[in-house]
Length: 285
Image 1 (cartoon, helix red, strand yellow):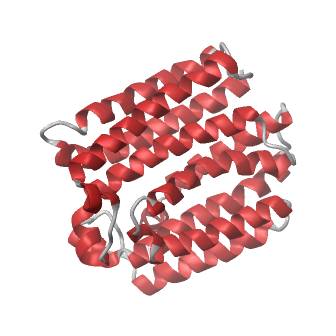
Image 2 (cartoon, helix red, strand yellow):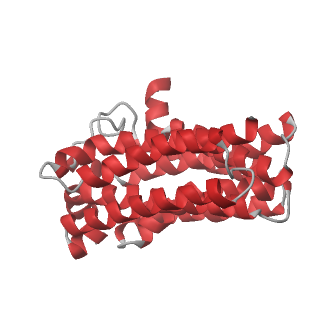
Image 3 (cartoon, one colour):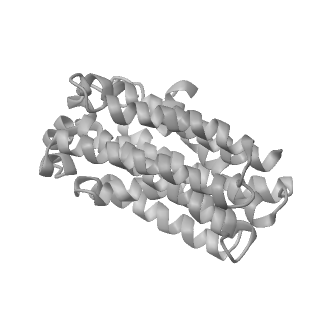
């Protein structure tokens, strides 16, 4: 098993983004920088559970990915055997849960909860319209809250607002993802996702509206919520990310929407990372 294939299986770039989100939550809650070793311990559980979630999803999605011709998936290309992918996911789940015990009770419970939901999502929840999308969107929002709870018993308003922005943009991305993968999900898993109920075009309209809502929400911290209020280090990267989200929202409704949806996956991920940098940069100034 090559390192590159393992990275693709676990989509480890998402785990890095989770670590940044946890750092943002901790810094806001502490109003200072966390100590290195407690911080390093606190970010490992969400990073490992996030990686495990992608691995187990690829295991259950193998037939669907084959139909969708996802040659970028190492299981589809035969570079990793399904049994090994399953074993990797279980190992990562167990280590992530074990490490969360040493953070605190709140983080331990969140880690167990999202580990269970990750398995449930891959097995069945993904096939249920909207429910699966909401779960995935929540995984993009919860790291901020997890970070706050790692260092405090209370979650600041700024953390809740940033997690809301992440949730809405994540939901937009996931709805568009189900529209893109509708063929494989239907034939390979027998899913009944949102595009199968209301159609691909209507789902893309929903996704676009959610992207626009996330853009509008992203300005609230700059206008009202310390430490982001009036903070140029926050608003500059966020405006760049918002421009990308707006671009996706508009172009996904065009004539070549099916072709654009493949392109939008990486674009939306890049925009989320840029926004995360804005969340973090404002705290480091």
